[in-house]
Amino acid sequence: MKLEEQKLSQKTLYEGKVITVWLCDAKLPNGHVSLREVVHHSGGAAVLLVNGSKVLLERQFRFPYNKTIWEIPAGKLNKGEDPKDAAVRELEEETGYRAEKLEHLIDIYPSPGYTDEIIYIYLADCANMVGRHLDEDEFINAQFVELGEVERMIECGEINDAKTVAAVYKYLRRISKN
Amino acid sequence: MKLEEQKLSQKTLYEGKVITVWLCDAKLPNGHVSLREVVHHSGGAAVLLVNGSKVLLERQFRFPYNKTIWEIPAGKLNKGEDPKDAAVRELEEETGYRAEKLEHLIDIYPSPGYTDEIIYIYLADCANMVGRHLDEDEFINAQFVELGEVERMIECGEINDAKTVAAVYKYLRRISKN
Image (cartoon, rainbow over all chains, first blue to last red; front, top):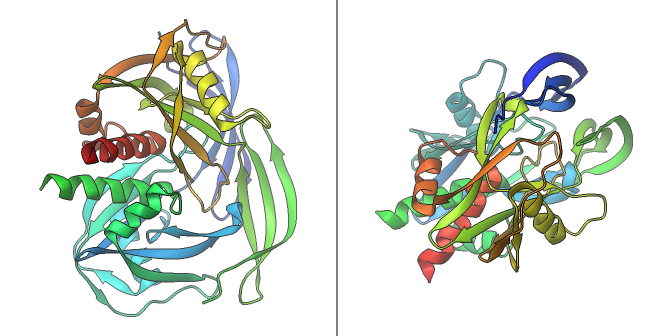
């Protein structure tokens, strides 16, 4: 079955600080024209910082869910910024840790039905505390948690964040093979 | 550090077929008021269908990325629909397999900075082919792929879809422990 769609038009509905919303017309494989709603996002960068048997997690209030959740450190790419640079920058801003060396771990597409965001995830196992510098309006707590406890938290639904789940499982698979 | 934000107002910017966009004012822990852009989504349901050493994957064109990607079968919840019912329904519509019994595997928050979507993921290991019934404007190919090959595809970046990564890794961890 032919699967490809072709973009016929694109209209910007909203241009915000985190997202831009496009309404597009797409030509489907059967020739029909259908509306496609796209949430454009500049991309995210995240770091799984490992220290011995522990990894660094954050507590952050997430407005869409109206609750505080667990996540690995992450943030939005600045325009034109390299994802790896963004990962180092966000880690340091949010937690005070400056990663010496980052290794690419995995990239994920969070919800491909409507967003074009890519979340680039890196692994760091060496970092120096240089002091964090949160924006005035940013509120985050960070702490190291035992990896076994983090897996338990995923298993029982205390951690649901997609990038955190992907990063932790990919890392667990890697170390279980070595 | 206090983390909670409080919703002060909510304005509907757009109400579409897949997403609704809200612009909200939030009171931050320091008393400042900040804009929050929220993509409201009714939620997704997905199934990892296992048949021996193989799992069922789909190829689907995803307009936001302008390419065809690999994913496990999934779809959007209808208003008020139970996620498990949606998972069974979408699996059958898209692939023709009717799952006999679903087990909850994991729920993920795809991108908590701006969307309230929850993707509910189930595991099925028994299903009958009853024939698929795609919507007229839906174009999907489905095939069983060896689990080892699926993990390789995740490792080398051929599979990036967050729900697929989460489902496959969670399942791999489970069977590696048994």
